[in-house]
Amino acid sequence: MEEAQDLPVREQMEEVRKTLREFQELLDSTGWARLVEVLEGQIAARVQLIRQPAEGFDGLVKQEFAKGEAAALELCKLLPERIVEDFQQQLDELKEEVKEDG
Image (tube, rainbow, N blue to C red; front, side, top):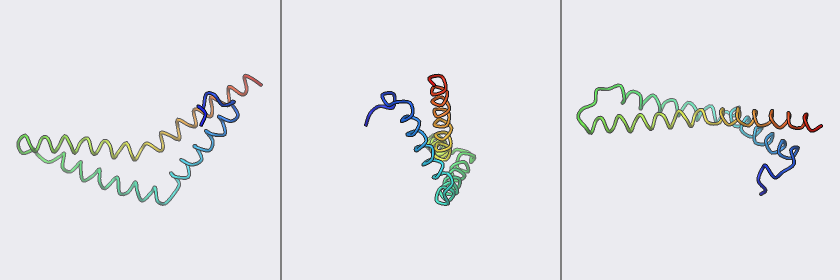
């Protein structure tokens, strides 16, 4: 597939709209809502582990690992929204480019 920059602006806009639509459909789906519930439960379990007093070096290592897992799960939960925001910004920029050219 051609790089996005090599496509004419209107084709780039269509590609961005398509991706934006797909991610918005994901966010609006019941499957995504259920996945977010699971992610939140998993995050809560890690936070509970983090809040317990660490017992020795091994306990500290487990807590640090749990912190990383919790952060990664939170990122998974937020990533589609950030992608939508990014693609919306790209679409707005392409619209401005079309206005300037037209």
